[in-house]
Image 1: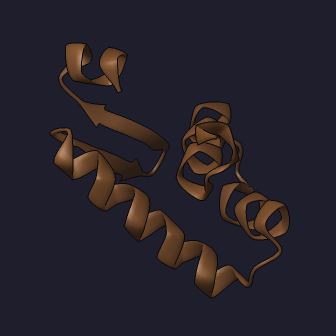
Image 2 (image 1 turned 180 degrees about the vertical axis):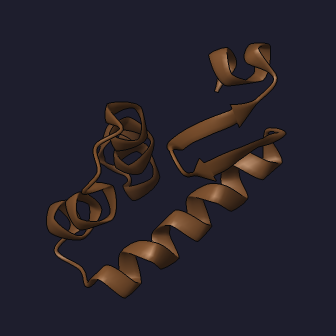
Image 3 (image 1 turned 90 degrees about the vertical axis):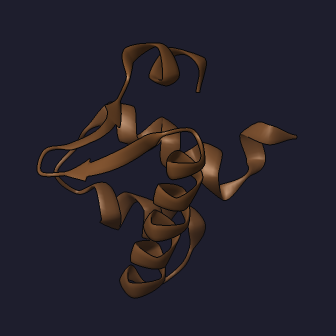
Length: 71
């Protein structure tokens, strides 16, 4: 199911916008911090396919509002 995928979990955590975002990804996936950053890059690539991108400071999904709503 979709809600079990790594990317779905990252997207869900993105909307929580906590300062420990990368650490939460690493903890929830049982991976290292460096691998969590690689997952973020993968997520950013998927966002780019939908004409969106991942803002890092603060952590947010950026792009056309309509594209964000349908993502």
